[in-house]
Length: 174
Image 1 (cartoon, rainbow, N blue to C red):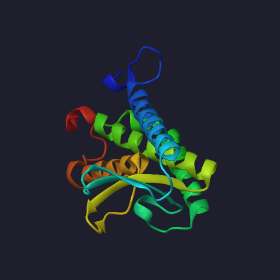
Image 2 (cartoon, one colour):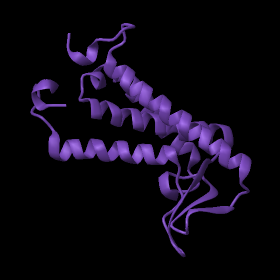
Image 3 (tube, rainbow, N blue to C red):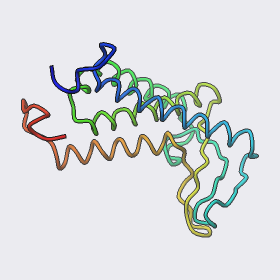
């Protein structure tokens, strides 16, 4: 039995790591979104670190960072497919390196966090607003950040750290 497959409850540690990461992302994302909705009007901004980092309440019917607005139904399908794929391939993910399991957990948590908004509200609540003066990055949220970080980690792995087929994870390092 490899290190990632042992756990106290019979579920492999790698699966626990992936799903625990997803759960933390969903919880943090939903809590912060609900606080923003409860305390801020649509379009309201509050400086956190001067004008560089603001909280600005917006809604988005598109993808992360405001891309492809108006395609909420399409993104519900994509989120469901991505989430189901991660659940279906959980055993294979559990055999991967810890940080790869973390990456899939970030993607799953982000997909579910935004999916909850799309189903509940018809749009995603965005509130993180970065930039200088009138030059602003499109607003985003914790779920968007988690998805982006997870995808970057997996891309980094694919480009720089992929191991030959059949090589066990222990030989490639964690």
